View 1: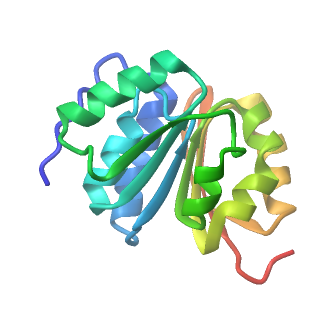
View 2: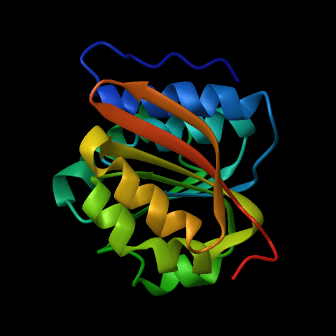
Length: 174
């Protein structure tokens, strides 16, 4: 499906995520994706279109969910993307749709570290997570938290001071 996404004015970490999704597209396929902290839904739209995948897009903000609904409709992806207003990984629907073969978290490092156990719990064996919204001075904290639970960084992308990581969940890790 041809997809045109307006990138003018996007936050640098969103740009890193779009770059990461393009790189991932060349590596493998995904069918069940979670976009945690979806914001305006642009990453959900891109992922759904790239892989013709099912996406659960979650955000705590009512405004973000409204903006995401508009973007999803604009791109005709209402059948593929489910929107959920929720706080973190606690909603029942997240568990019902789990495990995900790709989890996208474009949020600040503090949330990314705080939810590492939940990411691992909801990610399929050998699944991939895309972490972004990480400022350079918080990067080591994120890397330490994820590597301690058996994740390995397979690609790092930076747009100073923002960092993004593509991590693989190692099946037989802790």
